[in-house]
Amino acid sequence: MDLRLTDKRALVTGSTSGLGEAIARMLAAEGAAVVIHGRDRGRAKAVAEAVRAGGGRADIAVGDLATDAGADAVADAALAGGPVDILVNNAGAYDHLSWSDSAPADWAASYDVNVVSGVRMIRRLVPAMRERRWGRVIQIGGGLALQPMPMQPHYNATLAARHNLAVSLARELKDTGVTSNVVAPGAILVDSVRKLLTDIAPGHGWGESWEEIERAAAREFVPNDIGRLGRPEEIAGAVAYLTGPLADYISGATIRVDGGTIRSVH
Image (cartoon, rainbow, N blue to C red; front, side, top):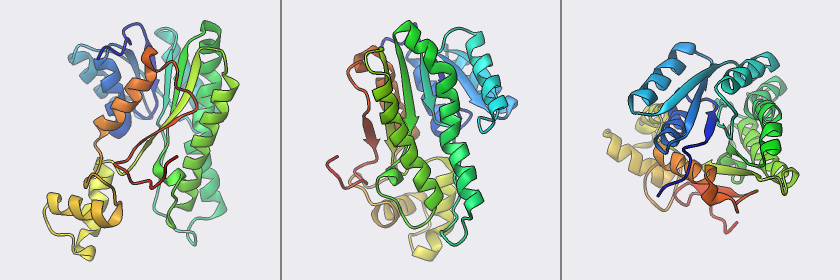
């Protein structure tokens, strides 16, 4: 399918690894010019060079989106190559703190990194999209926004905020040609998740091979209807669809890519 992205330019925040990198690579493969963002210039440059080696177009933007100065630097670098038509707010962080371990300062820091960082980029890039009468804003959310667990309460809450702000933004952008949506991954096989599951597997009796561990985790730890973890490319596919003109009629929506983890009709 031609997603009609050849004349579009996309900034994917947090795209030096994991989901963000997969999203940027897929958008580039579909013809979009991409801006690779991260806090480490060397890692951003390596991803951009890999995109170019595959025939894609890529620039880099380096900065810490948890600060206004960092967001200014990222926006300036992204816009230096031309208008940004697509903003994918993927950058964020999480830890494994419990209710008893997560102090108010941890909640505040998590909110700044996972929520306000995206707001900073929306404020810097969306007004120009509105003026051009076309644009896409996509938040990478998650199932924990809808079905939180006891651990990581501060992170669960920030995901819920991402979902909420995306719908509010969709209402704000009514009749502008700019849409706002959420892609909500389930448990996705990135390096950090693989390490976590491998580390805890012995204590759960999940086996020794990765195949055994993944099947057991998808049955007991993150149960879903598919029986495995998702892959970054599967999230990237959902994002890519929402970024193109074929998704003009979708706004304020949450697209779950979670194998059926969330048990809901909504």
